[in-house]
Structures are given as structure tokens and as C-alpha cells.
Length: 284
Image (cartoon, rainbow, N blue to C red):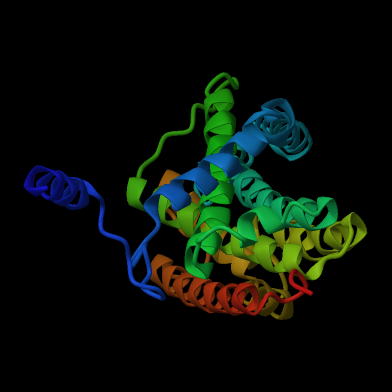
């Protein structure tokens, strides 16, 4: 009888302790869930990398070719640099931010339309963790597009862009892709069909990108248009990123743009977090 009792006691001692009802099993951060959802996001766009990474890179190079031929005559100098050197960084970051936006909004919208959004709402993942994975996946795609364009530009005659301020390239690249990925999350929550997302892309993202000083310096604009440009957050992204390559800013202190982007990212993260936590247009 004593042996049986001792054996039962040993088995009981080797049994993992169970949490009390209502006690969280993952008290802080669900690292495994965070990594799993992040890899899901990366694999989703990497399976069609020809469309999500290489096609945007080719489109960006076509912009470079067209504007270099049309405006980049040998004697054309902008900010003390040859025109193609001025143009290249803006095209790189423009491709990065546009694809970061496309990634996060398409991920949410496809999940809503196909009904698979429940697969990320049901697991024990907090709102902050869920939002972080959407943003991290979009930022990853943006940087991969940027690396593809940067590498291709080294094959361009007389270009070979060099990075003079690495901190500015990393900081403004990160702030820009984060800003657009958060806008993509909000758009994905709001949109009910692909037409809605396309409307935001065509009437908001594209105009703000093209009118952000990518192809020109804003001192060439009339004062009213300069004021509008300074109210465009895309201008600070592109000008700060270009500063990392050229060491020259267009119109404003670089730190001013850094502060603007930090504030905007904080506000958009708070808004996206609140919308996700309330289940706006994804829980009914």
C-alpha cells in the first residue's frame, strides 16, 4: 500500500502544474504567436515575390529611365548633384512606402473578403501583437523592395548611389514604411471591397507620393504650393531619406522631419490599435 502511495505521489509531482481558472497562461508577450503571424505575413507576399518585390522594382527603374531621359540632361544639376543622383533616393523610398501600404491593407482586406480573418482573431494574440505583425510584415516587404531597387541602380550607367548618412536612411526608411503600413491597416479595416482600397491608393497615396518632391525641389514651387508641400508627410519621408544618400536636405532641418514622423506614427499606431481592439468592421 505504501509503494502504491509513493508511486502515485511521484507521478503527481511530475505532472505540470495547471493554472487556476482565469489565470493567463501567457502573462506578457506571446513570442511564439508573434513570430508565427509575422512569418505568415512574410510568406504570404514572398510566395508571389515576382509581383510583390520584383515588379515594383522594375516599375521604379522605369520611372528612373523616363525622367532621366526626359529631364536628366548632362548639364542638369539639382541640389548640387547630377539629376539622376538626386532622383534615385526618392524613387527608392517611394517604392518602399507604396508597397508597405499595399501589403498591410491587402492582408486585412483579403482576410475579410475570404472569411479567414477569424484565423488571426481567435488565437491568444493581443491587439498590440496583432498590429505589430501587420506592420512588421509590411515594413519587411518595403525594405526588400528598397534593396532590390538599390541593387539594380548599381547597374545603371553613371549612377551607383552611395549612402553618406546610414542613420538617416534607416530611420526615415523605417518611419516611412511604418507610416504607410499603419495607413494600410486602417484602410484594410475600413474597406469592404477592393474598389475601396483602390480608391485610397489612387486618390490619396499616389498623389501624395508624386507631389512630395520626389522629382523636384520644392523651392521651385510658388509659396502657396510650398506650404502645401510642407503639410505633406510624404515630403519629410522622401527628403529625409534622400538626405541619407546626398547629405543635403531640400527645405527643412532633418530633425524637424524626424519629429513630425515620430508624432504621426505614434498617433496612427494609437488609432489603428483602438480600431483593432474594438473590432471595427471586422467583428459583427
